[in-house]
Image (cartoon, rainbow, N blue to C red):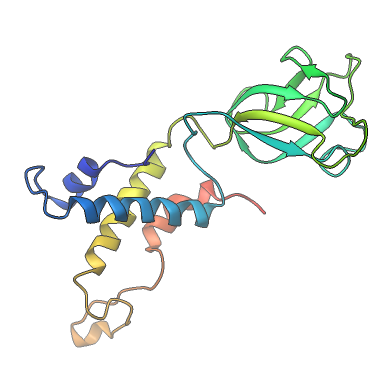
Length: 195
């Protein structure tokens, strides 16, 4: 799903909804802006409609005490977990990290329980976690605004013959920075994944 709608971009650009001449182009630009934001931040901001399964190594992706499984990406909801020995775990067997907010970045088995992250034959891809892999259920308002702003910027590029050229402001020409606009970077900075 798109972080911003065609209508939101048209309102931001001062375009009427009746003007449909560039709708296909604007829709493509919204998708490109969203992709650029995801790449810059290193995360997806809105959950997929359907849960998917990710596989984890029972040695490399687990803490030394065998209680914490590091997900390596954002998770907004958990549907099912199968430990490497084939045991199905329920929400009574683990807690999410962080505990009271999303996105989750790890699953910690309860210390009073009888489970540890383990495997039978081979540790590679032994643990299965089915869930929705994103930062949140819907894109945060700041991400929606950054998408609209970046899409508007990208749309304006089609009319600028030398958009990537930096000119001297003293000469009466506006200086246009290359890459993401500074205001978009500022909005996105708190959302960047620490690598």
